[in-house]
Length: 330
Image (cartoon, rainbow, N blue to C red):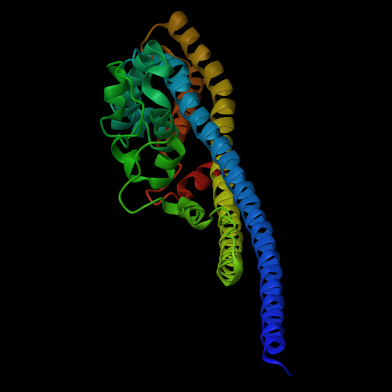
């Protein structure tokens, strides 16, 4: 066979091979783009799911914080102002009224509640917006009676705008993440799955030309498989994050509802106590047994509310505190 024909045949074969590689590369690139788009859709869906769960949880904890401030600045404040008027409570003769022994106008618990009520009134006067969403989250999460917030509430009473988390709240990565404040050293806590997004990239730009195109297309396809795996992993993590946030949201809503129900009863008992004071004065010894019992019921309600206000919603690691569950069961 003449050499020119041999060369021509080789050229035709090489051309056919090149065409095949080009077609394969085009197919690989098309598949890579499709897989990358699926990956991005999965990631966006997961991210939107987290954002929705985060928003609901933020609202629930903030509402709990607002309810604590409202209750402390109104009913608790009214109770404190009137109960401390009562003089000569004979604790030895208060059998069956145990709370009066441990919770009276001179007890540490009452003093703590009085201080928290004063701070809440100052916040209410300045307006909730003055303390910022981060502080409201902290108020809804930590004890507002036992000083768990450190100087946060003291700062709030001055009217200084608190736009981020501070004090104890700053060490809780979950709360900081919800409030948008700076996270503690160590990363995103349970929101760490969001970092997977950094590995999900847009499909690489199409290259043109023979074997180079084929090589890049194959690499793009391999990368798209990796991106898809990352997107699926992120979706799983997002689900776990959503489950954790839903539990926190539910618990916050339960505590808010419980405080509201208790307050309805508490307000009635406070009115009964005020009526007794108006009619009989402030000397405990002048009250009938029924009147003393009614006041005891008022103290009992205040003590129960204080127990809830003392309980923290979350631990420092962002997990639900079992104490709040015991409060709800009790």
